[in-house]
Image 1 (cartoon, helix red, strand yellow):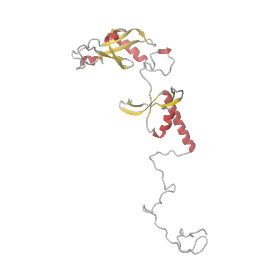
Image 2 (image 1 turned 45 degrees about the vertical axis):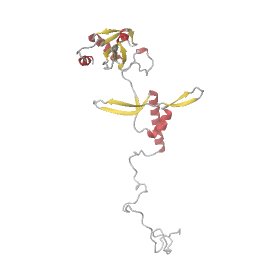
Image 3 (image 1 turned 90 degrees about the horizontal axis):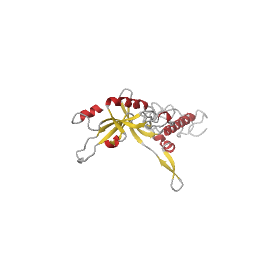
Image 4 (image 1 turned 135 degrees about the vertical axis):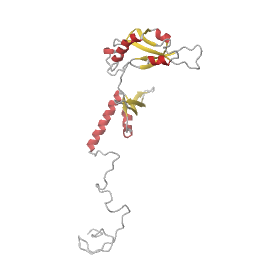
Amino acid sequence: MLRAKAEGNEAGALLEGEGFYISRNFKFGNGCKGVTLLLRERVSVFAASNWIPTFKIYRPNQGLCGRTFLREHLNSNLPLSSNGARGPWTRLHDATRDKCTHGHKCRDLQCFVGKRMQTEHLVCGAVLPFWSTIQQRVLSKTVRTSGGGFQLVQQMRVVRVRCQRADGTETRLVGIHMTHGGAARVQAIEMDIRGADDADGKPDLKPDLKPDLHSLGRGKQAGKGKGPAAPRQPSHGRCQECGAAHDGGYGSGPFCSQPC
């Protein structure tokens, strides 16, 4: 990154103030000193003559994390050469892979301060059938109002995420962002729904598959055609149950139209 920035400058070298810096006295809880990389922002064509340049701040565990002025940064940091910054930069990068910068003193298992890799939860897919349950149990929070009562506040954050698979391909997801507690409640809701389905004994049918109506006795019999049912014809002869002669009315086949 530093080499690419130097090649992109007009003079082909780093500008004044660009480079690595290390904190004077501050140390993180894991024993590592803070290391930063400053890269100067491009000057706008509309900038005034007395414009003060700003610098982007890059950290080994957070990437781009803000902007600053050179004078402010020099108050608590010292310039460092590229070779001298390699060791502190690598130590802080490795120490914050899955741990916060507080080190072993931090007792919060879900602390994300300075952590380089974080676990995020996203609910995607067909959530509309269970939207009311998720909204009541996960996406709402009861807060106290100024009048002494309570109010249900909806908390929902829809995000779009770009993920990179192991094979290098990229996939994009859109869903509802969940906290660790919200993700646990969503899993509990899923277990409740599965338990209710098992208790009802309902077959696990996919919504895009239709049941066979002929096997259930609800469809037309094979060979009857697709048109309307033929009108019933008058029956003739004798009933097969009582032996009485038919009255020529509209019976049901070889049986009487009225109960024998």
